[in-house]
Image 1 (spheres, one colour):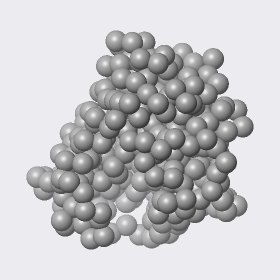
Image 2 (cartoon, rainbow, N blue to C red):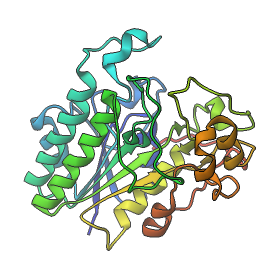
Image 3 (tube, one colour):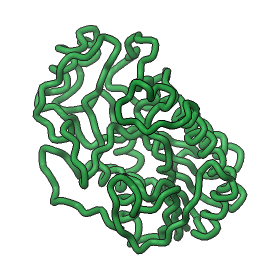
Length: 310
């Protein structure tokens, strides 16, 4: 039975909402390399906090021990590909290998600490970019085998962020096989935060054509729904040792998805013919079926503003 949960990346944008979702049911401890008061969007919390680094096995073991963690929600990561940062305006200057170092080795050290200390379940924030929808370095279009895309669709990553998340999922799966730790990867689609709404999550815009090698899916997930899915993943029984789930709240378009796909991606017209209404190009049916996930947030029906404090 899970009683104590450690949240890595606990000071970050999703961390504040996941903590708020879990704290009434579990004893929650936050783990991050900066405090909630020192992140881009500062916030306050009375939850226990451990300052440390994912890429240190000692720090991971210390955090799990202090939290007495039965389960971990692993949100900590570098959320972009640092090898491409010279062309990214406003990106923090980091070593070119930082994405791979933190996202891959950080996940490895965390899982190694988890197996040493008897953690039962780990839920990780992954991304729909595992498909290869990140930076198309080759400038070849992302290959769509069928629509809607589901968890069985092949992954074809090119940039290090996408690749690091594929490798993170493989690490989880390996530790599940070897040490009988239940692991879940939630493949998030463009996270929107109640404390900082993004324009594409307000809906209503008519999507415009992008360079030929860029394919968007016009889907996003609200941080409140991420929090819901993390809780459901902790509660779920009867899952396979490792499971991956795509996660979205809604599409960003007023038009039906089929209409948008036919206009912007004519080569996918036949594949899109079965899409109904605002059904996404990427399906969340597996999360609905196995986790009981039901999106609660949409730009079409805006919820009351959330402070997200924990």
